[in-house]
Image (cartoon, rainbow, N blue to C red; front, side):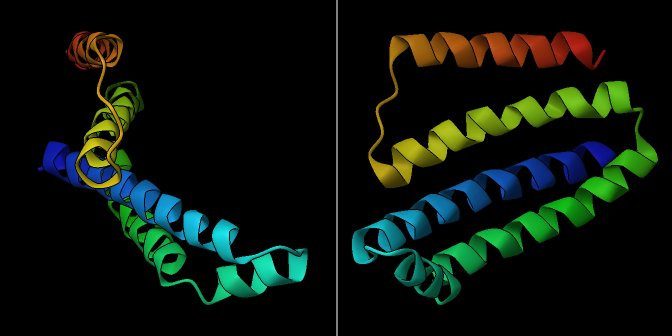
Length: 116
């Protein structure tokens, strides 16, 4: 169960990054001054959605840390790079290159080695 909770926590963190990216894009397009950036940021639903996802992720991560050794739990966090890459490709039209695929493979191998 703790691995499922860790995975959900990590996926929520990746989703939070997606929402923050969407929110920052809107804020930067519509804002010229510091006061406009603050106002736009406070009223931006994407930014709030990202913060909400981070909050849920943190609560799940508390559970994970209470059930797993830190040396096994923390390497799983690097899987967030994998999920973020996938979300960027699916929803932000970001490219997946051979270099990125190689990096993802190294991350996955590293996680497997470190969590055994």
